[in-house]
Image 1 (spheres, rainbow, N blue to C red):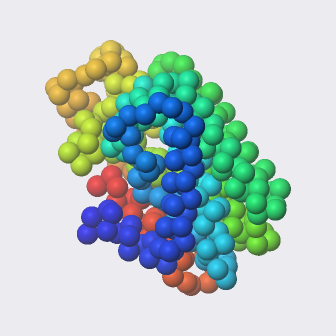
Image 2 (tube, rainbow, N blue to C red; image 1 turned 90 degrees about the vertical axis):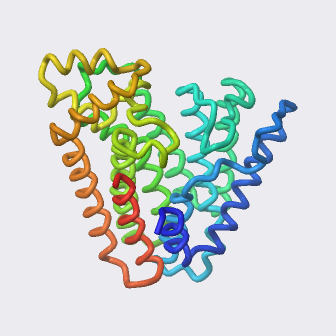
Length: 328
């Protein structure tokens, strides 16, 4: 069973409210596109289609907490997906990306200035939507998450390869990726006044988000190019200091480290990609990084032990399995 089929099966307990959430996000997207007179034939009237993990987890968390009607949480789930899309729009500007999930990126459709504003617009719509729940704590948590995402990027900006430590890409993952997972998982419990559930769900989301980012970094390094739609080692070419790459740098001898430094941040050929992969496998980088991700998954699963068995809880466990299968 492929990834999409597994996710569809996993999402069954939240299928209807998840579709509602996607429709809300699509409305945000169309509203953003309508604000500018610039048009392109290739632009999609719908937002880039991803896995929908954040809104799905938000709805699963609501179910695990005993919510009576998950439809009430569809706007909340949509808000967290909008925050994610906003971060992608900003990332595409930074990375100069021309496509996003098979569609034209906002910066390619408009320009960098308008794309940043488009991302800001999605943030505003997300916060506005969360405010309808009448709980300042939910809004405060979302704003704090946006702040953490920005802080993580700023703290990593321009860091020379020689000065990076293993803690730093983990801190980036915690702030940029995992904090949004944690917020999406914890918000339903916060709105229901379930403090114990909220703490457990935020712990689950944070740990799952860390594992997700680590497996994403591993996929870039050793994933199947045909499956990913891009060549391996793109993070090397883009000069991104991910956890596996910092680990590889630390384990290389001085001669190979000088070679690796020369490859970093420039276009590399097939032979150079293979050199990186060979060194990463020989030095145990893949196994070490995967082991780190597995420990985060164990932490995520342990956090779920406070909940009673339910279809939503089972789906949250399955998400953990799917995340760890991504780097296979």
